[in-house]
Length: 163
Image (cartoon, rainbow, N blue to C red; front, side, top):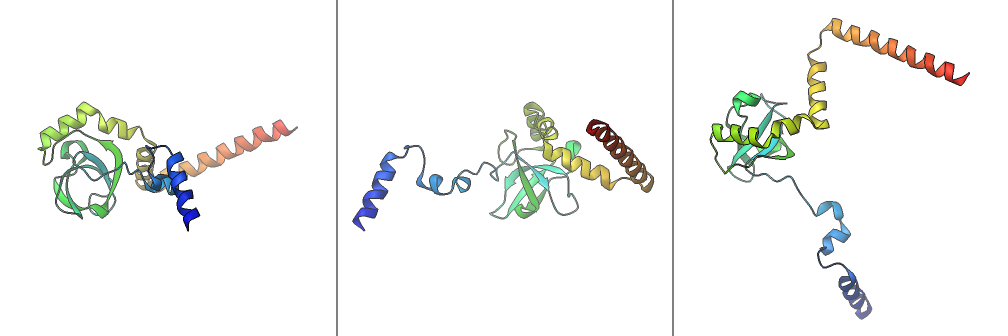
């Protein structure tokens, strides 16, 4: 027992003082960066506004928040939502708690939050999913034909390179 205690003490002394002991044991479990806070941009995952972006404006309690689009930017009105129905992003606008819609819109424009969001691969995947869902039968057919044509071209070019 004494040896184990001295080994732990020497390990703690040799470690960098800025690292916590938890960081060495579970590095992934130590640093959360996406907090539920006013100004945090989030994607609504369930409900009538599913697939739309919103911004957390106020915190009601541990499970619910007030979100706002603003409506002119994202189409989401100010309403209360459970946190379970939100996917938090890395982006945050600099606003105070309970900010008005105009203040929120100006903060989003100033920080260019929506432009940064639309440049991410997550946003591109969401947009592609929406596009695919809105395709008509004929558009899906044209896509299938284009894929077959591309596949044939790739096979043809690979065949000539083998010879």
